[in-house]
Amino acid sequence: MSHDERPGVASAAAPRRAGGADTDLGAWRGVWVFVELERGRVHPVSWELIGEGRKLADHLGVSLSGVVMGPDEAATSQACDEAFRHGADAVHLVRDPVLAHYRTDPYTQSLTELVERNQPEILLLGATTLGRDLAGAVATTLGTGLTADCTELRIDDETRSLAATRPTFGGTLLCTIHTLEYRPQMATVRPRVMAMPKRDPSRTGTIVEERVALAEDDVVTKILSYIPDADADKAQLAYADVVVAGGRGLGKPENFRLVRELAEVLGGEYGGSRPVAQAGWVSADRQIGQTGRTIRPKLYIAAGISGAIQHRVGVEGADVIIAINTDPKAPIMDFATFAVVGDALQILPALTEALRERLGRRVAA
Image (cartoon, helix red, strand yellow):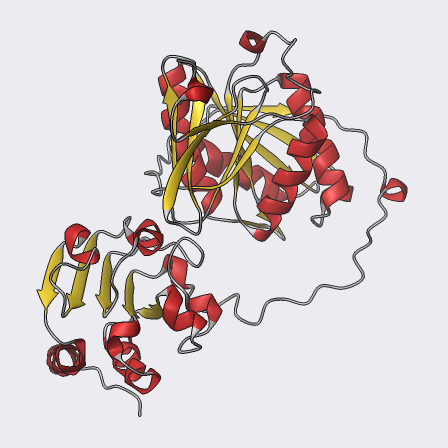
């Protein structure tokens, strides 16, 4: 039985351009990770993908390369060095003033030309606002398959293809997708889905300086001004070490203050499941799960959350999960590190008070 005939496995097809059905797919070798550099800062998902790309490259017996794009400034050099320290063997570097700000056209042109020139078999990007825009444009231009918002990446030994797994049907099922006849095989991964690799300060690699013919006059989009995100310097839910979340089991929105108070005592962030976000108990940016934020904290406390697969996908990377639920058969109890059977409305305030006395932190009124 071929891969595309196996239950639960899909095969992506697209118009031929870079690595179509009549192309020698064996000529495409290597794993690439797009390093998202914007306004001098690299998005952390890039290093998470470098770590995951390292595993894929080692399994295939090929090299791992990063792709860095930006203006001629120190930030690109630093990004290259950090790519090596997180596991890359080489970095393909494009420096051009046209790339000073992200715009779809010049970035798509640059990455597309690099792929056609070097023929990597796998290309990974972060499922960020920038990464999603760029990945879709590049995949369309190259005429290859793209699997978005993956939760697992592995190599199928039989076909040497990338097996990219992602939730589907609203997070109720997991689908594994193979791009069998086209190259490169492309996938995007949300921040915090993959573990951050260990950084090795002594590690170095090769910088390959690439040339792409870019002209500012050819770019229709112009940057008139830049308005920074007002929340950019605040704690981000996806990168918090401690997260406390509540679900419909809390009964009513007024009880959600118990979640916020415990999170404050622990010096962490708070969030909620999809039902409470949809009900307006918490803002959409605090929704945790596959259709919300994926988190990987050291400690995750879930109060009144059943733990359906959509939620599990977003939290199972946590080091320790404590579930508080009146139902001992709730799905979250099966994958929690510690399962507490009880009423969250009683347990949360008692836990908050005990921790407040132990840690000496007061909860704001």
